[in-house]
Image (cartoon, rainbow, N blue to C red; front, side, top):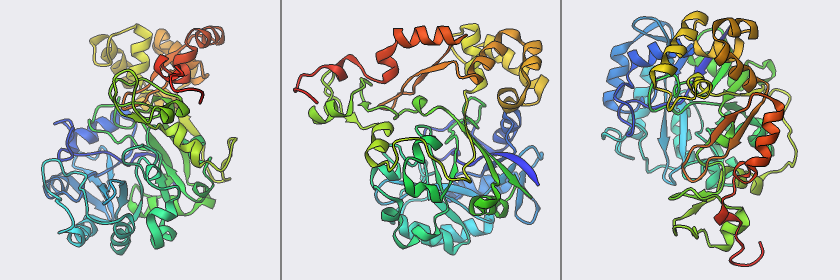
Length: 424
């Protein structure tokens, strides 16, 4: 049994807002540097992307696909949008089954426009699920809690969304603004496996694999993925890893124009209009989960693996060397040095020993070790703006910054604290 790292949500060239480098050979090369063993093919229903995938993959054995250089395996899958704007993921046994699914949904939406990597379908969540299952695939909601396209933005339960197909649902994808702690506050979610995925729009290691799953699999194929998701007693999913939810773009309730953050009661009193710029205030994931949560304290089903909060290595190096960005020469040269020494980024972040890290790069090692110890604070994201991590060197420094940045860390702006419309 292999223990593999998988990133199972991303987009190819035809999804819009995607890097021109998002092609199979580049994705495979960068996934190796990241430490990923398998990726999703992404956007497999798009005709031109399907042709690109077919041209650049080889079937090594029954249902096991790899790029032509054998750097990374690929599982057939993609993402669609239903008639309520909710996004769903699907995974399929083969490229042939992808062709079959495409034929079933032709006529229910434009599958091949330049921005249609994630097609908008005139089908309900239940109807999409039916067609995926008819093709031998599995399905689940993507970034389930985000306020624009997540399933919990529209429904209080997954059963309400998927109808009769609810019984076939096996997994939910958490998205960048939630983790196992938040998702398991909802009792129905204790029935499902959790997937954590990057939703990457570029292939570089600070994006691809920023969230991933570590799964025990006999082969890097659909059948092994399906078994890991369904056979919870075997505990084949051994780790979910990703950003702290406070880094997510929609964690806190905030204005989607100027990003001012609000207490939920204040936002309601203002009728969801920002007092600073009159933009729309969007309810954050944190407050939405609190509305529908069944539990007040952390609780998980017995099969749930640990959730490991991570930062991309380039961001940790950026903090260590006080650089302006992750793509500067100072950051990239040290990133490459560490990856060459340890083999890949995930090994550096998760598996490398402290002594080994210090020997390789003492300055960066101290930041990685501090992050591992939990000496990190977050100014939450909201309104479409990512959150900001602050890595501290010690417990003492962290406590001092907590006092200094109290309001920012709570995710409340000055506008969100003013009681202009009375008590709330």
